[in-house]
Length: 101
Image (cartoon, rainbow, N blue to C red; front, side, top):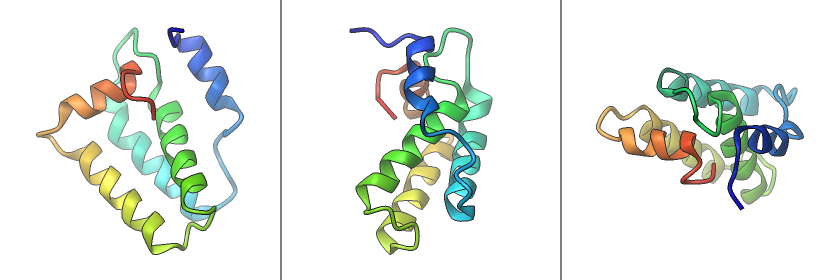
C-alpha cells in the first residue's frame, strides 16, 4: 500500500516530540534541522516526522538506552550523512518515503 502524507503523519504521531529526554530530543532536533531545508511540497514526510521516526527506530534498536555508545555513534553517522552536501539523494529518498525512516 502506498504511504500518503496523512498516513505517514498518523503513524509517527504516537512518537511525538518532545520525549522529555534531553539526549533524544536533541538528536531529533538536529535531524529535523538537517532535513528541513530540503522538504518540498508533496513529500510524504515533514522534516519533524522523519526525524522522529528515525530517532525512534534507533532508540528501539539499541535497547532504549541513549547513553549506549552504539546509539550515539549511529546518531552521529546518520546526522553526518543527512548533512552531507554530496548526499542529496538520501534526504530526498527519506522525505519522499522511498526509504522508510
